[in-house]
Length: 543
Image (cartoon, rainbow, N blue to C red; front, side):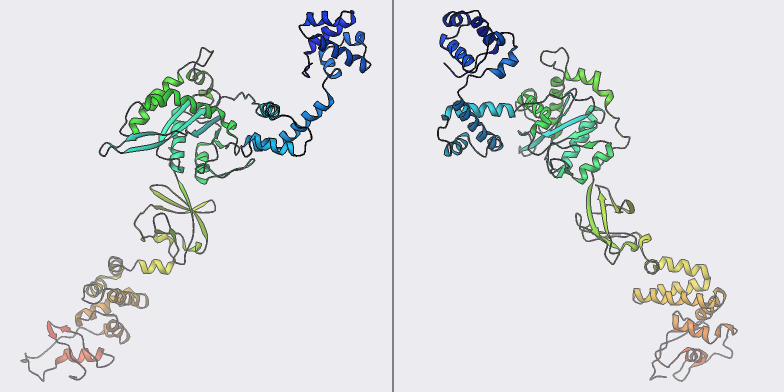
């Protein structure tokens, strides 16, 4: 007899007929089994002291626990094989070990091992148990499962005819299984987030959670319990008010819906797309969208409604509305403020200013194609228009300390404005200094000096000093300071009296004495004018 157990319904009939006194041959004929099998069961009942009259009224579930005709030795061999299989089950599933490898480990310590074929049958039975799947009823508007297809599509450059391969993003809603497909250049962070954004626009709403696998564009560090999100992906979810809920590592069944959707797209879309040529990404996506609508409008198997029908009736109204402001893809960067109150922005090799109070602090930078925002903690402290000029500086004057602001304001225009606030004569002197042929920085410094006198003397005296200096043709800080110190601005205007004297080498005139009076030492004299009479510069030796 085979050690395979009879069905408990047949065992019930066998026991009933034994109780009626029928022969083994008659019972075997009635149940379509061997008389030897009937004899084995009758022998087992007698050997274990069981009463057929008592067994006759018991249900199959109880008989199953009472009657077991398997050979104890065979049962022991089967248990030893199952123990080894369960020990190495994870390695078999992950394909780190083959069945032959596990069998060799099993037979080492077993005196009477099972044959390899019987061992493989038990492996197959055990793996079927571990591969059981659970059915989920997904709530409307709850999850969006996303993934990239393994096979790529392509388009061709018009000018060169070059073939350009592209990635294919696939998303599917859990309840209605309405699918979205979009071609992008890569699986990088920006393309991944752009694909999600297009998916939300396609569905016209936002689900509660996004379920990707653990790709680096969305997840920095995978975890069975609390994965670490990519900051750009997290920022995207915050903008749309949804959650990121990545699948567990090495658990494709967590997103089996999108895995199945990828296979469906191969049949419904790929076969048509690959039969044609497209010459831009836009053409390719338009063709994908056309075939996608046909796929979503196909009825489910053995049902009279499609994915679009189920989406419109059950799921569309459960999605959250899209935000009014469109999402812009952003990136993140960390930088330390240098002593010149600027940060080094490595992506563009450019420097941006922040308030000087944050020197030495580490700041967070959030940037997109147009703007650069700088945060300390959760407070934005600076906002700049993005500047891609390499090794340049973008500085906001409001970020400077007071003394730096003052230096930055020292331009000819600002100096002239300050001079005009004092008076006409002062502005004339500053205009003369700035218009001289001296070095630019020296002109600025001299103008600062002249304007600083106004703070000491007051506007009225400053105007008188500048008026006197203009009458002498003097346009520098030192001469104006001497006029103020010697109070020459109090004297009446000096006029030249007497007849005209021809020029000759001994003639000095009143102008010489005024110039000498104003000099602190007899060094080089500046060119001055008095009553329209010009005097050339004299050296100390000529004096």
